[in-house]
Image 1 (cartoon, helix red, strand yellow):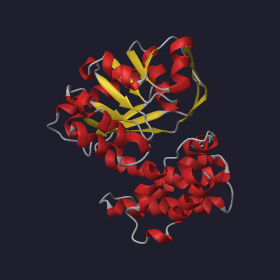
Image 2 (image 1 turned 180 degrees about the vertical axis):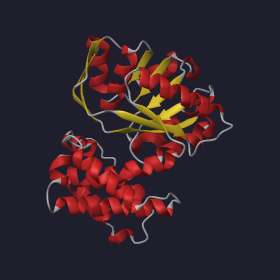
Image 3 (image 1 turned 135 degrees about the horizontal axis):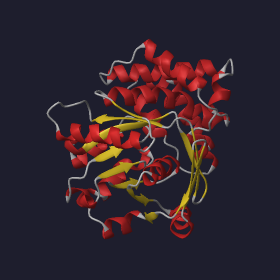
Image 4 (image 1 turned 180 degrees about the horizontal axis):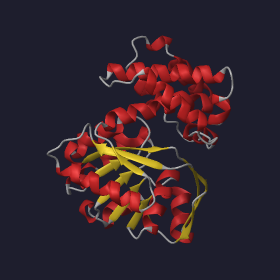
Length: 309
Protein backbone atom coordinates (compact mmCIF):
# COMPACT_ATOMS: atom_id res chain seq x y z
CA UNK A 1 0.00 0.00 0.00
CA UNK A 2 0.92 3.64 -0.45
CA UNK A 3 0.64 5.25 2.99
CA UNK A 4 1.36 8.81 4.10
CA UNK A 5 2.34 9.61 7.69
CA UNK A 6 1.12 13.18 8.17
CA UNK A 7 2.99 14.65 11.13
CA UNK A 8 5.94 12.25 11.26
CA UNK A 9 7.26 12.72 14.78
CA UNK A 10 8.13 10.02 17.28
CA UNK A 11 4.96 7.95 17.05
CA UNK A 12 4.47 8.44 13.32
CA UNK A 13 8.05 7.52 12.47
CA UNK A 14 7.90 4.35 14.55
CA UNK A 15 4.77 3.08 12.80
CA UNK A 16 6.11 4.29 9.45
CA UNK A 17 9.31 2.30 9.94
CA UNK A 18 7.34 -0.83 10.80
CA UNK A 19 5.19 -0.45 7.69
CA UNK A 20 8.16 0.37 5.48
CA UNK A 21 9.99 -2.75 6.66
CA UNK A 22 6.89 -4.77 5.73
CA UNK A 23 7.22 -3.56 2.13
CA UNK A 24 4.74 -0.69 2.00
CA UNK A 25 5.51 2.60 0.28
CA UNK A 26 5.64 5.17 3.06
CA UNK A 27 5.71 8.95 2.65
CA UNK A 28 6.70 10.94 5.74
CA UNK A 29 5.33 14.47 6.08
CA UNK A 30 7.45 16.40 8.55
CA UNK A 31 9.02 19.82 9.05
CA UNK A 32 12.05 21.74 10.30
CA UNK A 33 15.38 20.16 11.19
CA UNK A 34 13.78 16.75 11.56
CA UNK A 35 12.61 16.89 7.95
CA UNK A 36 16.07 17.99 6.75
CA UNK A 37 17.66 15.08 8.57
CA UNK A 38 15.16 12.60 7.12
CA UNK A 39 15.85 13.88 3.61
CA UNK A 40 19.63 13.97 4.04
CA UNK A 41 20.51 11.05 6.30
CA UNK A 42 17.38 8.93 6.46
CA UNK A 43 15.45 7.74 9.51
CA UNK A 44 16.77 5.98 12.59
CA UNK A 45 14.32 4.25 14.95
CA UNK A 46 15.38 2.49 18.14
CA UNK A 47 12.93 0.14 19.89
CA UNK A 48 13.41 -2.95 22.01
CA UNK A 49 12.19 -5.10 19.10
CA UNK A 50 13.18 -2.91 16.16
CA UNK A 51 16.35 -1.31 14.84
CA UNK A 52 15.62 0.68 11.70
CA UNK A 53 18.04 2.79 9.68
CA UNK A 54 17.43 3.69 6.09
CA UNK A 55 16.46 6.26 3.50
CA UNK A 56 12.90 7.54 3.52
CA UNK A 57 10.63 9.54 1.26
CA UNK A 58 10.04 12.75 3.24
CA UNK A 59 8.44 16.09 2.34
CA UNK A 60 7.08 19.16 4.01
CA UNK A 61 3.33 19.63 3.84
CA UNK A 62 3.23 22.15 1.00
CA UNK A 63 5.62 20.15 -1.22
CA UNK A 64 3.72 16.95 -0.46
CA UNK A 65 0.43 18.42 -1.61
CA UNK A 66 1.99 19.93 -4.73
CA UNK A 67 3.68 16.72 -5.80
CA UNK A 68 0.96 14.20 -4.95
CA UNK A 69 -2.80 14.05 -5.24
CA UNK A 70 -4.82 12.84 -2.29
CA UNK A 71 -5.79 9.67 -4.13
CA UNK A 72 -2.17 8.81 -4.84
CA UNK A 73 -2.36 7.25 -1.38
CA UNK A 74 -4.37 4.28 -0.17
CA UNK A 75 -4.32 5.61 3.40
CA UNK A 76 -3.28 8.80 5.19
CA UNK A 77 -2.35 8.40 8.86
CA UNK A 78 -2.48 11.62 10.88
CA UNK A 79 -0.10 11.80 13.84
CA UNK A 80 -0.15 15.59 14.19
CA UNK A 81 -0.48 17.29 17.55
CA UNK A 82 -4.15 17.76 18.46
CA UNK A 83 -3.74 21.51 18.83
CA UNK A 84 -3.15 21.94 15.08
CA UNK A 85 -5.76 19.53 13.68
CA UNK A 86 -8.44 22.13 12.96
CA UNK A 87 -6.06 24.60 11.29
CA UNK A 88 -4.29 21.98 9.18
CA UNK A 89 -7.50 20.32 8.03
CA UNK A 90 -8.86 23.66 6.83
CA UNK A 91 -5.58 24.40 5.03
CA UNK A 92 -5.76 21.02 3.28
CA UNK A 93 -9.51 21.01 2.58
CA UNK A 94 -9.30 21.71 -1.16
CA UNK A 95 -6.60 19.05 -1.59
CA UNK A 96 -8.53 16.49 0.45
CA UNK A 97 -11.76 17.25 -1.44
CA UNK A 98 -10.13 16.12 -4.68
CA UNK A 99 -9.94 12.51 -3.53
CA UNK A 100 -11.53 9.73 -1.55
CA UNK A 101 -8.53 8.40 0.38
CA UNK A 102 -9.47 7.33 3.93
CA UNK A 103 -7.93 9.17 6.87
CA UNK A 104 -6.84 7.42 10.08
CA UNK A 105 -6.20 9.58 13.14
CA UNK A 106 -3.66 8.31 15.68
CA UNK A 107 -3.67 11.44 17.83
CA UNK A 108 -4.18 12.38 21.44
CA UNK A 109 -7.64 13.60 22.45
CA UNK A 110 -11.24 12.87 21.59
CA UNK A 111 -12.08 15.68 19.17
CA UNK A 112 -9.74 15.09 16.21
CA UNK A 113 -11.99 12.64 14.39
CA UNK A 114 -14.92 15.06 14.53
CA UNK A 115 -12.74 17.79 13.03
CA UNK A 116 -11.48 15.46 10.30
CA UNK A 117 -14.99 14.22 9.51
CA UNK A 118 -16.24 17.80 9.20
CA UNK A 119 -13.84 18.18 6.25
CA UNK A 120 -13.81 14.77 4.53
CA UNK A 121 -17.00 13.17 5.87
CA UNK A 122 -17.52 10.25 8.21
CA UNK A 123 -17.38 7.87 5.24
CA UNK A 124 -13.61 8.56 5.02
CA UNK A 125 -12.82 8.96 8.74
CA UNK A 126 -11.24 6.24 10.85
CA UNK A 127 -10.65 6.83 14.53
CA UNK A 128 -7.65 5.29 16.19
CA UNK A 129 -5.33 5.35 19.14
CA UNK A 130 -1.79 4.29 19.82
CA UNK A 131 -1.73 2.26 23.02
CA UNK A 132 1.17 1.43 25.34
CA UNK A 133 3.76 3.31 23.35
CA UNK A 134 6.11 6.15 24.12
CA UNK A 135 7.85 7.70 21.14
CA UNK A 136 10.02 10.82 20.88
CA UNK A 137 12.49 12.48 18.55
CA UNK A 138 15.85 12.31 20.35
CA UNK A 139 17.44 14.55 17.74
CA UNK A 140 16.55 15.29 14.10
CA UNK A 141 16.21 12.02 12.24
CA UNK A 142 16.53 9.86 15.38
CA UNK A 143 13.48 8.39 17.13
CA UNK A 144 13.27 6.33 20.30
CA UNK A 145 10.13 4.29 20.94
CA UNK A 146 9.16 2.05 23.84
CA UNK A 147 6.31 -0.27 24.69
CA UNK A 148 4.09 -2.79 22.94
CA UNK A 149 2.93 -0.07 20.52
CA UNK A 150 -0.55 -1.35 19.83
CA UNK A 151 -3.18 0.29 17.65
CA UNK A 152 -6.94 0.23 18.12
CA UNK A 153 -8.95 1.54 15.18
CA UNK A 154 -12.51 1.70 13.92
CA UNK A 155 -15.04 3.66 11.91
CA UNK A 156 -15.97 7.02 13.32
CA UNK A 157 -18.03 7.36 15.45
CA UNK A 158 -19.19 3.72 15.59
CA UNK A 159 -19.17 0.70 13.30
CA UNK A 160 -21.58 0.81 10.36
CA UNK A 161 -22.38 -2.68 9.10
CA UNK A 162 -23.24 -1.34 5.61
CA UNK A 163 -20.14 0.81 5.23
CA UNK A 164 -17.40 0.31 2.67
CA UNK A 165 -15.08 1.91 5.21
CA UNK A 166 -15.71 -1.06 7.50
CA UNK A 167 -14.10 -3.38 4.93
CA UNK A 168 -11.11 -1.03 4.72
CA UNK A 169 -10.80 -1.06 8.51
CA UNK A 170 -10.82 -4.88 8.50
CA UNK A 171 -8.06 -4.94 5.89
CA UNK A 172 -5.97 -2.43 7.83
CA UNK A 173 -6.10 -4.56 10.97
CA UNK A 174 -4.64 -7.45 8.97
CA UNK A 175 -2.08 -5.22 7.27
CA UNK A 176 -0.84 -3.69 10.54
CA UNK A 177 -0.63 -7.03 12.30
CA UNK A 178 1.35 -8.43 9.38
CA UNK A 179 3.74 -5.49 9.87
CA UNK A 180 4.19 -6.53 13.53
CA UNK A 181 2.00 -3.72 14.82
CA UNK A 182 -0.47 -5.39 17.22
CA UNK A 183 -3.84 -4.04 16.08
CA UNK A 184 -7.46 -4.63 17.02
CA UNK A 185 -10.74 -3.41 15.59
CA UNK A 186 -13.27 -1.56 17.74
CA UNK A 187 -16.97 -1.29 16.99
CA UNK A 188 -17.13 1.82 19.21
CA UNK A 189 -13.92 3.77 18.65
CA UNK A 190 -15.33 6.87 20.33
CA UNK A 191 -15.51 4.99 23.63
CA UNK A 192 -11.94 3.71 23.17
CA UNK A 193 -10.72 7.26 22.60
CA UNK A 194 -12.33 8.41 25.85
CA UNK A 195 -10.76 5.46 27.68
CA UNK A 196 -7.34 6.56 26.47
CA UNK A 197 -8.12 10.15 27.46
CA UNK A 198 -8.44 8.89 31.03
CA UNK A 199 -4.70 8.22 30.95
CA UNK A 200 -3.69 11.32 29.01
CA UNK A 201 -5.76 13.54 31.26
CA UNK A 202 -4.42 11.79 34.34
CA UNK A 203 -0.69 11.97 33.72
CA UNK A 204 0.14 14.47 30.97
CA UNK A 205 -0.45 17.81 32.72
CA UNK A 206 0.87 16.61 36.09
CA UNK A 207 3.96 15.22 34.38
CA UNK A 208 4.58 18.55 32.64
CA UNK A 209 4.21 20.41 35.94
CA UNK A 210 6.44 18.15 38.03
CA UNK A 211 8.94 16.94 35.46
CA UNK A 212 8.26 13.34 36.52
CA UNK A 213 7.74 10.30 34.31
CA UNK A 214 4.61 8.16 34.48
CA UNK A 215 5.98 5.56 36.86
CA UNK A 216 7.23 8.20 39.29
CA UNK A 217 3.78 9.77 39.34
CA UNK A 218 1.82 6.57 39.87
CA UNK A 219 4.16 5.25 42.57
CA UNK A 220 4.19 8.44 44.59
CA UNK A 221 1.61 8.23 47.40
CA UNK A 222 0.39 11.80 46.87
CA UNK A 223 0.62 12.15 43.09
CA UNK A 224 -1.10 8.86 42.32
CA UNK A 225 -4.22 10.12 44.09
CA UNK A 226 -4.19 13.22 41.91
CA UNK A 227 -3.73 11.11 38.78
CA UNK A 228 -6.71 8.95 39.74
CA UNK A 229 -8.86 12.01 40.51
CA UNK A 230 -8.12 13.55 37.12
CA UNK A 231 -8.99 10.27 35.44
CA UNK A 232 -12.32 10.38 37.26
CA UNK A 233 -12.90 13.91 35.94
CA UNK A 234 -12.36 12.65 32.40
CA UNK A 235 -14.83 9.82 33.01
CA UNK A 236 -17.45 12.33 34.15
CA UNK A 237 -16.84 14.42 31.02
CA UNK A 238 -17.33 11.34 28.83
CA UNK A 239 -20.77 10.79 30.33
CA UNK A 240 -21.75 14.34 29.34
CA UNK A 241 -20.77 13.36 25.79
CA UNK A 242 -23.05 10.32 26.06
CA UNK A 243 -20.16 7.86 26.30
CA UNK A 244 -20.39 5.28 29.08
CA UNK A 245 -17.13 5.17 31.04
CA UNK A 246 -17.42 3.21 34.27
CA UNK A 247 -15.45 3.04 37.50
CA UNK A 248 -14.08 -0.25 36.19
CA UNK A 249 -12.70 1.57 33.14
CA UNK A 250 -10.96 4.08 35.38
CA UNK A 251 -9.45 1.29 37.49
CA UNK A 252 -8.30 -0.61 34.39
CA UNK A 253 -6.63 2.39 32.81
CA UNK A 254 -5.00 3.44 36.07
CA UNK A 255 -3.60 -0.09 36.42
CA UNK A 256 -2.35 0.03 32.83
CA UNK A 257 -0.41 3.28 33.21
CA UNK A 258 0.87 2.23 36.64
CA UNK A 259 2.35 -0.98 35.24
CA UNK A 260 3.62 0.49 31.97
CA UNK A 261 7.27 1.40 31.38
CA UNK A 262 8.43 4.64 32.96
CA UNK A 263 8.09 7.17 30.14
CA UNK A 264 8.10 10.90 29.74
CA UNK A 265 4.68 12.03 28.61
CA UNK A 266 4.40 13.88 25.31
CA UNK A 267 3.37 17.00 27.21
CA UNK A 268 6.48 16.89 29.37
CA UNK A 269 8.70 16.46 26.31
CA UNK A 270 6.98 19.38 24.57
CA UNK A 271 7.45 21.55 27.65
CA UNK A 272 11.14 20.68 27.87
CA UNK A 273 11.62 21.54 24.20
CA UNK A 274 9.66 24.79 24.45
CA UNK A 275 6.92 23.61 22.10
CA UNK A 276 3.19 24.38 22.41
CA UNK A 277 1.39 21.97 24.75
CA UNK A 278 -1.67 19.92 23.80
CA UNK A 279 -3.61 21.54 26.63
CA UNK A 280 -6.77 22.17 24.67
CA UNK A 281 -6.86 18.80 22.92
CA UNK A 282 -6.35 16.81 26.12
CA UNK A 283 -7.41 18.95 29.07
CA UNK A 284 -9.76 21.36 27.33
CA UNK A 285 -11.96 18.52 26.12
CA UNK A 286 -12.61 17.61 29.76
CA UNK A 287 -13.07 21.16 31.04
CA UNK A 288 -15.57 22.04 28.30
CA UNK A 289 -17.76 19.19 29.48
CA UNK A 290 -17.37 19.87 33.19
CA UNK A 291 -20.39 21.05 35.16
CA UNK A 292 -18.17 23.26 37.34
CA UNK A 293 -15.00 23.96 35.32
CA UNK A 294 -13.69 26.48 37.80
CA UNK A 295 -13.47 23.69 40.40
CA UNK A 296 -11.76 21.22 38.06
CA UNK A 297 -8.23 20.08 38.83
CA UNK A 298 -7.63 20.44 35.10
CA UNK A 299 -8.43 24.15 35.21
CA UNK A 300 -5.97 24.60 38.05
CA UNK A 301 -3.20 22.71 36.25
CA UNK A 302 -3.77 24.46 32.93
CA UNK A 303 -3.53 27.86 34.57
CA UNK A 304 -0.28 26.87 36.26
CA UNK A 305 1.16 25.43 33.05
CA UNK A 306 0.29 28.57 31.12
CA UNK A 307 2.02 30.70 33.74
CA UNK A 308 5.15 28.54 33.74
CA UNK A 309 5.42 27.81 30.01
